[in-house]
Image 1 (cartoon, rainbow, N blue to C red):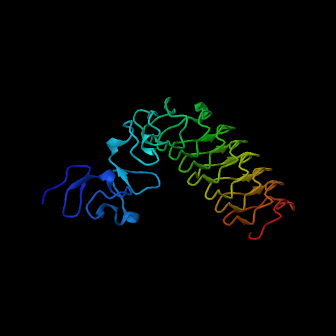
Image 2 (cartoon, helix red, strand yellow):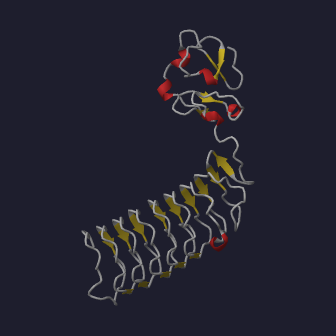
Image 3 (cartoon, rainbow, N blue to C red):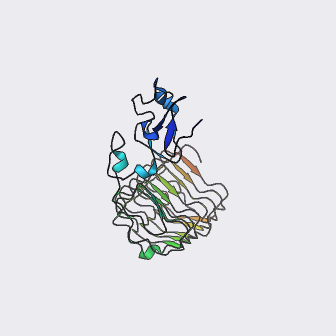
Length: 281
């Protein structure tokens, strides 16, 4: 009836072995009980080795010894984590710091950065060193303006979350350089009143765009220019009253355009010029 010490498990009706020996491909318990049901084996609170069922106590990570078959327990050990932030591998979370600037020592190799619930000043923020960044989360930052080319160096970014802010203006070329973005979140920015021409230029591979529930009065010429792979555009429930000629220029792949809930009174006969693939309106 003895109990195994921390980071050890008990073989069936026998002695204790380190958890690292469970599902490591070798029989360490009599009869091989430590190698049974390995497909469903999980280890909450421990590190699970890459592509294997075996797990490690957290104190075995970055201890200078390759305990995992692929050595992944000794990767990313020299990366520093900014003060008051949380880091897991190449994911850095600096939420709820009331900060207006990014910390100086965010690893340049960062793949995902969550800076939600802060007060980031985009006009003073430089993302140029984070060229491997894949996800950038900036929700709840009291952002009011998206300046031009602020994300220009984020060539590998595929997700940009700007939801739940106080945006009023999206400047021309605000998303320049973001050719790999597949998900852009702008929801819950009801104060957007101005989207400048060429605002979405650079988002050449974005498949869908949701701009519902904002305060946009006029849809400018060439607003969506450069969005060559956009297939769905949702403009529901805005205050759009005027659509300039050529507003939809360049949207030759759009099949769905939803404009319900707008009181459009000023438009030309060339309103839908460029929408050559449109199937649903």
